[in-house]
Image (tube, rainbow, N blue to C red; front, side, top):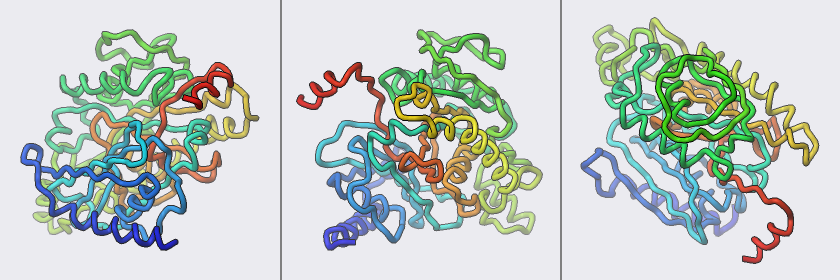
Amino acid sequence: MGADDADWCVRASLICDLLPTLSTTARDHRRTHKVTIPKREIGCFLKVFCGQKTVFQGTTLPRLFSATLHPFPPAVPAVSSLSNVSLSSHHSLTFHEYSHRRDSGSNKPSPIRSQHSESSSMATPRVFIIRHGETEWSLDGRHTGSTDIPLTANGEKRVKATGKALIGDDRLIVPKKLAHVYVSPRKRAQRTFELLNLGFQGPLPWARHGECESKAVPCDAKVEVTEDIREWDYGDYEGITSPQIREKRKQQGLDPNWDIWRDGCPGGESPADVNARCDRLIKDIRERFHTPALNKPKGDPDADRADVLIVAHGHILRAFAQRWTGLSLHEGPSFLLEAGGVGTLSYEHHNIDEPAILLGSAFHVDFEDDEKLDKLKKV
């Protein structure tokens, strides 16, 4: 680590230390902070923010990048959501510091990786994970596993907006690049998928839960419902909040410092159960879609049709992201995925053996020929 990196490491630490002292937004009981950082130093800042000892070497993040990060007390940071904005020499990061505590008692951060370059990220197969839209129980913080409840009206509106913003031939999720779609058997996930408004030939593998107003975007991918991506079975904790769970455990003479990633749910699933489901699905994705695509020669049109979309739930998708990078669930994923949120997983260096969480995903643009590309470079 050079002198400049060391200097920035100190500055990033000071910024992180200052975040809890900034003003609180009373409306939603969380603190919102915006920090503008030189582009070349943003990788180092993320490392410091997430409590890691090393920094990125050189400029490893794409030019288009924006992130929402959540530092949980006591200093347990989490990556929450990612978006794309056009930036010049500086990046603005927005932080939301929630006043409630995190379920996990672990302070150990999860690793954050980035694609080697913007061009390689576009050529490498990806998995898009989408959490179902808002429900009455997600608003209340109640654990919703097997209970099948509908989206709220606002939840439906937000999912529709997500589909319009992120799905299309020039958007983040390009329908013609999708090879397969996995959807949870729960209605809230299936309705979320419907509202994304992807158009498929033939019927869906379930009876539609409602209508979609806008014109669907054509897509040839197959849609599959799988139990492997249903939500964590909460067992005795179904339908209750984390504070209620801690109180219940206290009354039972159990450790009230409950951590689902470590303790699981009595009467429901253990971390090992969820681990097995995630690993099974990851194996299926890599063997059926990603490995064949990565082994195809450059220029093969089929190599570009290898992206996978998963529509499911909060805990299972956070567990899936943790297992994607090869980390165990008991380490406690410091990832958040808000209702209706979208995340991206991929690989570094176009290598199946280097799975990574893609922090910044560029939108897709097709160039008809090199001449148009050359003209664009001159603008």
